[in-house]
Amino acid sequence: MPPLGPRFTRRTLLRAGAGASLAAALGTTVLPREAQAIDWEGLFSKRMPNEGGKVKELVGQASANGKALRVGDKVASGALVKVAPGGRCVVSLEDGSIFTVFGGSTLELLLSEMSAGVLNLVAGALLLVVNTGGRYLVAGSTASFGIKGTVVYRQVFSPEQHTGQSMDGLVQIPTGFSDYFCTCHGQVEWLLSGRNTPYAQTNAQHHDAYYVNPADPTVRLHAPMLNHNDEEIRRLVDMQEGTKHEISWLRS
Image 1 (cartoon, rainbow, N blue to C red):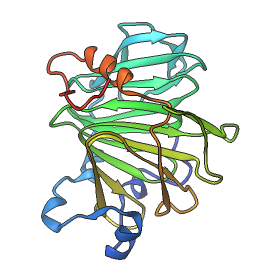
Image 2: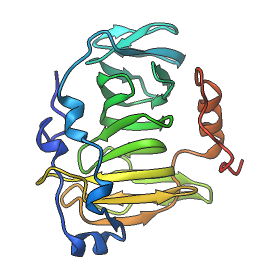
Image 3: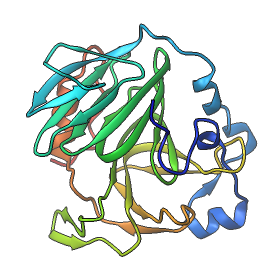
Image 4: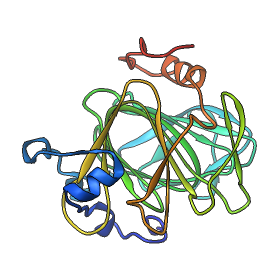
């Protein structure tokens, strides 16, 4: 099984640390002790091999651990999902949460129990809708993000990617900022290597996005909404099984 990004092991990935000065520099909110109730490290305390997801939609070609996927196939915990350029693969989890892995992406799915686990984005882009009660960690090559009943988009830019598509057209990606994260709606806890608990959180009513510097994840720049939109989120929610995510905040 591949490592969780080039700078993280499963343990160091979940260790976070910084004080009020770092949080102020990021423009985030320092979490009070009583707010640090979720044990993100506990997501790795056990494995449930029978847990997994199901392919809801497939455009183009995708595989799990090298085996070609079809609509209706199960994606087991521990699988490495790859989607060919130009395609997309929508996976529904057993708690009703749902995500899209876009073309050119590689994602490791690690579920620890019902409604909890890690989506490690090795490369490419991910759009994730987590229902209330779900606890997922979106891991990557820089910071990791604790997701609680939230809609998020994350993209790891390849060295060849220098622009992104915003509502106003193409925009230049700042040099050195190869990671992009958008809290589309809800609350996200930021984690960095160093200590045991999330050090800050961000809240969004409608798309709060940042470029993140992989050399120093405490450095970020505010960014526009790139390479995803409200229409895609609405379409993803429409494919949810059971209780659907509340979408009154969407503007299109």
